[in-house]
Image (cartoon, rainbow over the protein chains, first blue to last red):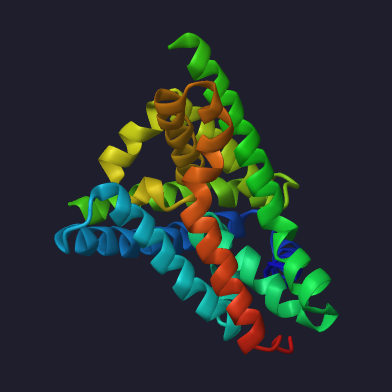
Length: 148
Length: 117
């Protein structure tokens, strides 16, 4: 993700310098089209997996796994960052952005070693997402337990 | 029609993220955390499930869908195991996606070298 974050920041600053207002609409249109396209791809995969005999829950999981696999491959090849510069939130809000946030620093920091480089830096962004997601799920679970 | 719904709803969720990028100083990491929290809350209330029913992958693929899956998982675990489920439901629900991202990401780190910018 660091790769994307840096380049996106730089890109964002450049965009802001040139013109602050008119680019917001353009950014939103790009985020809409790229994010929407990723979701359509997800829908297509889900439909195919259900047709192949999976339950809807399994199909959704396998859809995520497939999107994650493709994203990690594109990240390794250095292509996902290019999509990210173009698409902004369209590329980091879908589950693909989560996968990119793990794979990009894993590749980027491998020179710092397999433990504190790859193993630790993978979670620079995914870690907080997992921590807060888990905390929220505990809260939801507690409320559900006592209210049901 | 289901593809149009997935496109529009998924696209709109990303537009919300883009507006947060452009109009606030929130980093992408904070936006991801925020989206997962919102998804978990809406999932807990049972609202997000309706959006997933309507838009399919348009709602389940963006990060709020990840959050709502955690809420769904923890509720199911509480139904089955009671209070213990509070501790096991969330991580169990995210296990598939997180493990896939971790395993593929690790392999990518072994196979690829950082690209020069």
